[in-house]
Length: 429
Image (cartoon, rainbow, N blue to C red; front, side, top):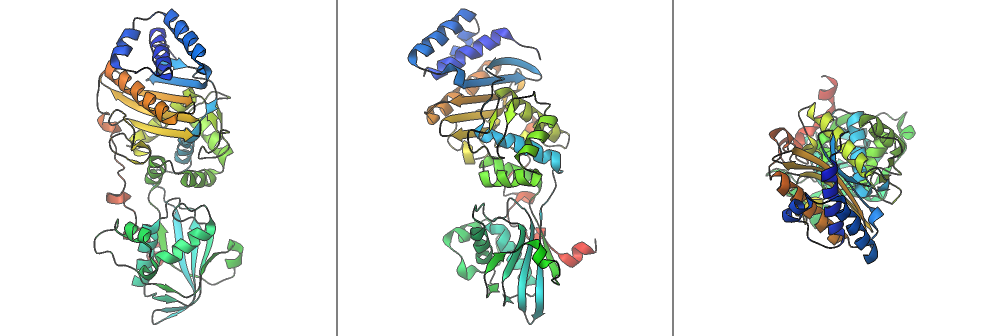
């Protein structure tokens, strides 16, 4: 990679001014453009005297394939939720963008006059985004097929999680609760409000409870499969996961890929990562054991863009976008249409992604800061991106990098009844 040493000096000045609490503005950037490396040395010396840990701050900024600035860019640092970049990349390397996770629903027993004398059977393949809206729509489809009451239980097998519950018992309780509006809480009613106007409120009565059983227990049980519930497409699942930096979803996706070791292996190959700059203990970023260099964070984001662009999408379709998505960006002041991923631990704040500029086009960056004042670190990160954009010119993201996956619209709406297909219809396709 080519390296612009003058701009590298600029970034060093900006980074360390931010650490010292000074404002990072376009004027500071312009002044720094003429600075001599001695300014960097003096700044570092001053910061050390003030007690700042300069080695704990990492930055990598890249335009195209050229590194324009970096500070400890190849050093392993706690990645926090930048780990989800690796999980996202590994998922895209495992399945196509339109991949859907199936949840099969069947009946074991006899159905007569709307009463299933037996059990409802759910076979899950690990849908990471099975929420209240999905359960409500599924119950409505079962009632449309003539099932109004189940005298037995809901038997669930496979990797099933609902509403991102970490306790399996909570997921199973939520599934049963979604089936009948008579048992809904305010939270469920709020989710129902996201469904299309006129959506029925289900009243499917389940006499028994809901429990998980191993698949082996169903091997010799006659089951009539009646519905195939399909998840949202993979691209929307990844977008939702990253908008809210949802750890449960990320862990589920990582496990479906094959576990953190497989995530790391797939991401390393897909982004051609240098050896020794990515180390993962899980797929979400929880814990300081997950580490990466700023250079690796940028390389994975660029690899994501390449993989997505080949299919008509972009990083804006799997990452939150400033000015458009809320979640982790709700309190940030980032340049509009920048596609970014945040990361936070008790003493780590990280940010990586793409910021659009008029002169240089998409600028790829990663910032990993270690320190206890997380709100202040976030402000400094935002100011750094604003200053870079001010120097190279404010611009919106190019057309091919504008968001196409807008959650809760069109094919990306939770609880879409069309994703509950009658099993007989599916078998005849």
